[in-house]
Image: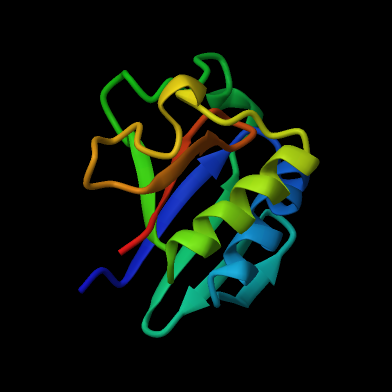
Length: 127
């Protein structure tokens, strides 16, 4: 069981705006908040987002470099994937792999793929 995952971000305000609604939709609750970070918890696992210090911002994040590639979350249903997809569109968040959506991961993966403000890929996958 994963205990927590901590991700450093380039703009904490934009990160909170992006992640708060999505994680709340999935049943996460805000766990901790301090000047340079925030966390949301679901059951016994939590996600932490921390503002990176300026001295470490010279090389921007890219998911194809060594490190985190993406975060994948369980959806409750295909309907939840569809609902989140519509909310992402309303918020102006681009859907990745539009030409294959919602089966961009193959015929067995009904999912939506998108990116957070730092271009971390996020997946919401139906059972």
